[in-house]
Image 1 (cartoon, rainbow, N blue to C red):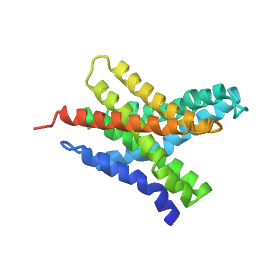
Image 2 (cartoon, rainbow, N blue to C red):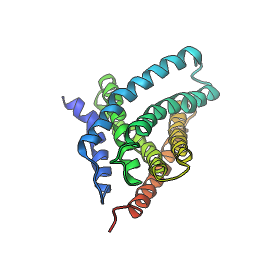
Image 3 (tube, one colour):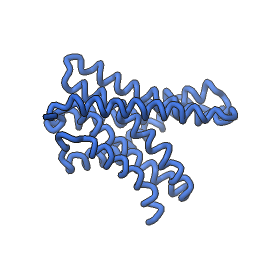
Image 4 (cartoon, rainbow, N blue to C red):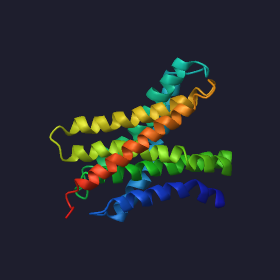
Length: 224
């Protein structure tokens, strides 16, 4: 039970933080829960299915190949995981009537992403124990949140723009870009010290996410 708590605690800390940042018009909690559960179940199932297909068509057997690890990080892991989250936000959250201001893109994208991160974290914690759960609380979970904020920022803009598909795809692209960069530097850990690049990309993503949150707060339709 304590291990399960260690795995999901950072997820709910991030959810609470983003929820509090939604200052002017809170989303229905039941709808937030639905998005979380879709991320935890459906997004994970989509990811697993696509991973099985990718392994069949694009087997990567050289863990010391920078090119193969680049392909794995950006075009397999990042694309598959972010796409599985994107389609839930795009086809479940975004069309909903409660999605009525740009900040909602961030809120719903984070809920879906944290659902995904919760399932992923539980699996890793069961396999690796408390040390893995603690490490991921300060690395992988915030990283997933960062990718979600960047995606959600543009999906929030897309809801109220004429060229919505461009903003939606830009959000997906940025999530894939930062996710791929973060993973790539971790995948090529056979190069001494290269892992620092993962944290550089994470810090840049956190900075941009903070700016994105403040921008949508400032431009809220419900700000008095």
